[in-house]
Image (cartoon, rainbow, N blue to C red; front, side, top):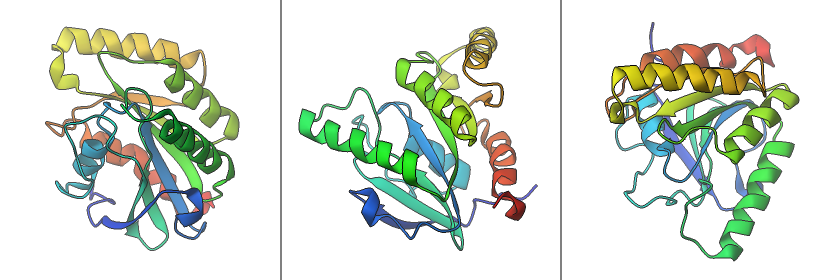
Amino acid sequence: MSNLFSHCEYLTSAYKTSQLPDDVGMEIAFAGRSNAGKSTTINALTNHKGLAKVSKTPGRTQLFNCFEFKPNKRLVDLPGYGYAKVPMKMRKHWDKEIENYLMKRDSLIGVVIIMDIRHPMKVFDEQMITWAHNSGLYSHVLLNKADKLNNNEIKKTLMKVTKEIAKYSDSTSCQTFSALRKTGSAELSQILTPWFAEDNG
């Protein structure tokens, strides 16, 4: 199966939702804690090492970074939540803009919620899953950094998290992933591709 996202290109970055591309077409958002590996996940999915800028400092994604792979079909890397060592004023700005984006963005069709497999299902993760389910959006959980655990630990965590997710949503899928090793990229592509089928809206 060919990778729908392999021709992805950087489109724009926005400090505010009002600076985002026109609210037409379809887009999915990548959400997660500042250290979950959102940018490396996008790079692994698109097979484009330098597409989303990666930093060793958690919380460097301080803008909405938009990437387009077909006309009016986009991936959006949201500012990270959690650990970021940023002033409270900046954090409040992010909270407000992310909430605006999630609540008002008509072209948003789904969210990929990225977690560190060693620290899954934090409060905001649970809130995102619940919100996506209640909003009727597609949602998929990525347990990233699976390269940090052995196979037995990976299987146990996947089972545990899958049961946890079921408490909040009966429509959210889940997989293990390693952006570093690109394991799980093909599976992720196969899950996300149908979200962009034309008959979805």
